[in-house]
Length: 81
Image (tube, rainbow, N blue to C red):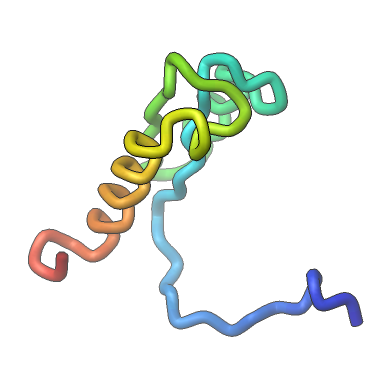
């Protein structure tokens, strides 16, 4: 069995939103496609990194991780921080 295809059990519940921050200059997943994907996911949000490309987490790490942390905190709810 290929370890990369093995499924790992998780205790993380299914959530109605996902995160995939697009960047204005990302040519693998262009912004129109990111908008279409977000539109198809119930309760999804879309934050566009106007000044980044393919590697958002390396190009704009502070903002990227702030967005990820805000997303995760939102999953926990206001009282569970």
